[in-house]
Length: 307
Image (cartoon, rainbow, N blue to C red):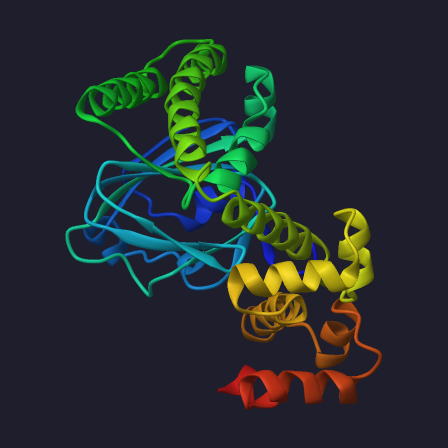
């Protein structure tokens, strides 16, 4: 596991997701429809605490709405919108449960399968975060119809007795990825045109997104501003100023939030001792960790674990 936020790959997720309405090809692709009905008898615990997904994850909202957090930033998924998450980000449900009437199609794609597509979706995703308010793309009627046809064909392939399903799915995935990239590129271009009016705000957003990406990957070992400033070719003082201007919170506050998130996760969902958690999160001793945790939550680690 990276740090100790739960890191889940497709086999782990397959076991946790509802048993019904699942389509899969080995460990490379998994399609699952999430709704109030499918979750009623088998609610997956993964919706209640932060995790890292060791695969690409696409949420397509068919009906209703839902909120998700990526690296502590919340995004709103609305009907007919597509939301993509890349491996390594900290993902958490922004709501306690799927709302009544909500239906979401979840598509999980392994890194190996995506690698065969030979498209750097990571770069596209980061670019969309740089210039867009949200990595959610709302599809127009024509795009929506095409997306449904892709998904219907994928389900038919998965359900078939074809002997080369993975190769067939890889070919379909290449076509689907190019389709999505075309939609993404148009939205990025539109956002860039809109944002040319305020280059200062765009600069601040770019700095904040880059800082949060670095912090989500390094918070357990690097809590000083010098590390992040060097990575971003800025001075610590200037980076702190830009982060506060962009978010209203200081850079150390963001880093502390990642640490608290991980500490809560380990206390509630792992059997690690306090001593092990202190070591995992790079605190000098238990006393310092206790003071840090209580200052941020109002409870001691033991009280939180047994609360």
